[in-house]
Length: 333
Image (cartoon, rainbow, N blue to C red; front, side, top):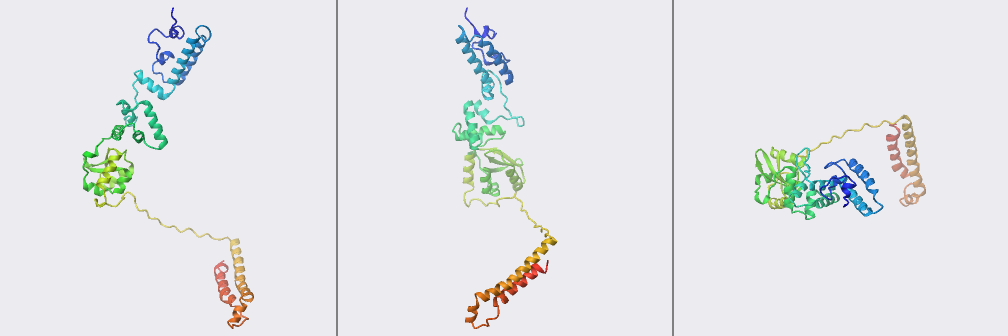
């Protein structure tokens, strides 16, 4: 009698061999509770280890490896997701708010990306600070227009090929080159009460405000590749071609009013200290400059035939300085 380790040791009915991960671990199909998965694995691991010695040691080791691989796959979110798809599970990865799926899902559905490539692109995007769309293009996994179309599906926006578009000159004149370059966008024309604007990504609130204030209508964004938008900017905003409006209408001029700070009132002790310091400065002003005359400028005055007894520096410099200190530091205290 041939040994069937799955049936004889694990109690798995006859059928597909080897069984899928869920049958192997005695789980319901698509079980998502990792604790339940690990609990079943430990129980079965103990059962199979009973046969680790003896004539079935090889079969035991092989089955233990299969159990471990199945457990590791089903407790890894990404690997489980991929495995479940191969088992016929439909993965609903739509955004709860928008109802749209991520662009990588559309590309994978079209057979343009594998799960490994998606993981690599997301890791590259996180390391480099790029969007997933730009990471895919930079890694040359998809063409720019293909990535842009997938992003349009994710955002629920129309995709346009700017080669087929002829923007309205009057519209171009109203939106300056500095604005379109900053937002990587290209205004096209008014349609059904909104202004069609080709964007490389979902427009930010600043651009929406800019359009509303300049054109008195809301923006209707459509998706295009960044390279096509930049080529359009270079073509339609070449030097001297546009009669551009002023750069910004969204920034309001802010006027600032200086508020006079209340003047601090010194305490009585501070007033006394300032008065004493002022009197010292007054004395030094006159005496110091007088000593300067006596010890250093005496010969100079003699050469000029000036009376040697007068302290000229003390009178003409020290005196006014002493008066100034008196009025500013002593008298007002």
